[in-house]
Length: 472
Ligand code: ARG
Image 1 (spheres, protein in one colour):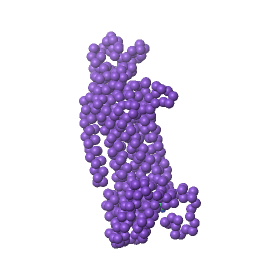
Image 2 (tube, protein in one colour):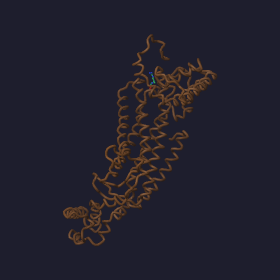
Image 3 (cartoon, helix red, strand yellow):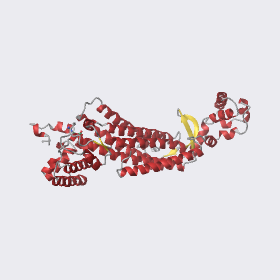
Image 4 (tube, helix red, strand yellow):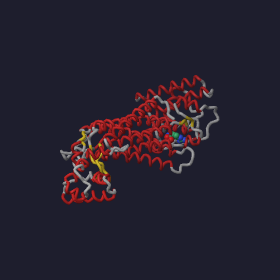
């Protein structure tokens, strides 16, 4: 019979027991559960609610349970329902009455959400580190491939040439914002619910600040009902993870496109490719596809939990037990995706010659031809029309803008001279865009410096988190 079985005459059926148990999932919270119980026991003793001898017995017993779980010797029993019951039962078996006093002034309702908050904080730390690894890889490739130029696209049509470094840095900044969202999610989790008890607080003279300090929470949740009912800190994490996965899916979609025969801009290393069991020539970008695909499940984790929480009355409802799987799944998935993407990017070969060649296939100089005329006094709309006519001419002849003769250019406008050929060169087009945040070498060098500085800053913030010093 369960620890709560006093008022029952019959046990639930085996099927029901299996259905209601969260142990297979929440056993991953054992470290947090033990830390929470030790903090609680210390506080109870400091407040004179249990004796110091009981506290010491509880702590020693919990430490023993922890090493048994870590070594694999601990026998989990589904009949214990969840990790809280498993640990408490094992403790009581070891230390008797002292163990049975641990649950004074506490409920599983505040216990579970304490565990989940500690877990969420820990996983945010893991995700921040994974985010940094991914951003480091993007910076490295951007640095190494500083001169590669590729078509920039709008509507997946050639638009204007850009530096590959610029293109990759665009992703760098997306992931930098993801870092910020994860920091915010970590802050949301960083509040102590312990001491809310079942829902209404307790008549024992507890000290909630003491358990907060002991567990490294930066603040205490001021409302006991909110403390046991709130799961929006998990939604914050899931949202941050979802956005990051969306960013990864966009990056990976480009990796898939760029590694196709049609593009050929990059060649993935063998380490990050797979073959086909039937087509011997195939080299598939499986891992990029899988990251793209996994973004779906993380968004699913977010939406799933939102729907679970919708319309739930206060305070604890068993529905809330469904909070752990999406949290754990999203954290595991995003963490793995970041490291795989980082490895894939840092080992891929960039085919700069193919990128450059592809620039000749469109009419990527058209904007600069229009700008050339506008800078010589023609109103931009007329300059745009003139460049458009030249594109049409090229299309009819099956040539590129750079293949037109000077007479062709001058047929459209007297303002053209020999200088137009330099204007059409992809590298010149790129380097003309010197505006802040633009794609010229000069502007990208400035951007790179800012990106590096931000990287260093975030690295030290991450180290601070590791030491469990919380941020404002
Ligand atoms: N296993 C439960 C969960 O994960 C722990 C809290 C149970 N509380 C209760 N009143 N049944 O949510």
